[in-house]
Image (tube, rainbow, N blue to C red):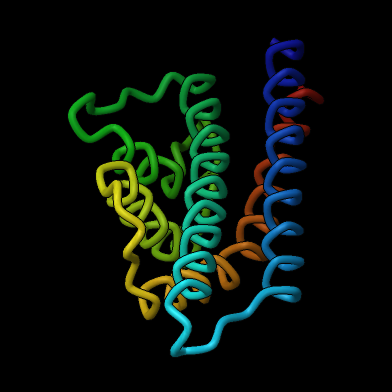
Length: 163
């Protein structure tokens, strides 16, 4: 059992490294790029890049959540498994596992999930810049919460290896 837990810890840590890279790219991009409100080409480029950052960030987190869910054998509704997976991560299962994310994290991630779902089926590049700016605020708010939640969950996993 310890080997499986250690594998899960390793997978989570590797995914956190990817999240950090995505976040570093985002911060660097924001620092070096901006757009003028009246420059449609700059706005479009900015929106495309930020939308990719948001979807990659959420998809990386979802991979962590899926691994947690699989490890603890959570059953997911196949019709709406993305939302169901996120729902499962905020619950504590007594005697089985701690919650992986707080309620505050959950509500912020829900916005990113909605956008990621939208983006998967929207193939044009005419994003609403106000929505992109709104989502940027959400990702900036959620990143420190995710780090805190993952640290707490990893501590829980480490305690399981001591048993």
